[in-house]
Image 1: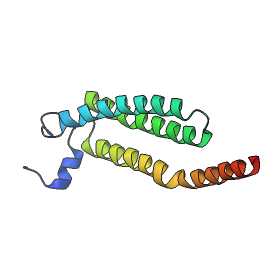
Image 2: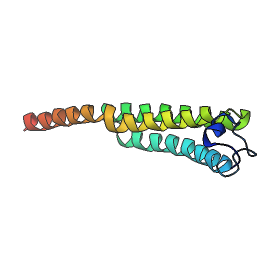
Image 3: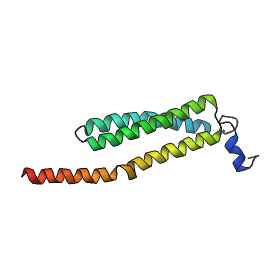
Image 4: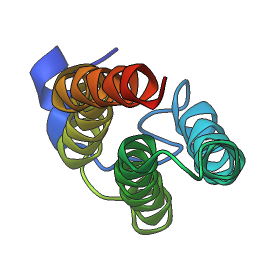
Length: 122
């Protein structure tokens, strides 16, 4: 390290400036992009009758596709590290928010609806 930590925010994200994280971050982005598409296809086939879960997985799919695709664009065009870091934090934070904040109230309402349907069908 030759610069102050905050000076690295405005350096280009390339192999020369970030040799430790450049390749692993891009490999993780490719793996994340492949994993999110495969996960979406598998889970939507399993839960094709449950609309609430399909909506959540679609939200996660598009958030992941946007985040990981932008990381690949940053890899090719060498954007500043602050843009790369901001994209990662916002994208991964949005995925956590979608899964643990946005959809749990819908899941509990859907479970109550299913319980009522089971009760009244008897």
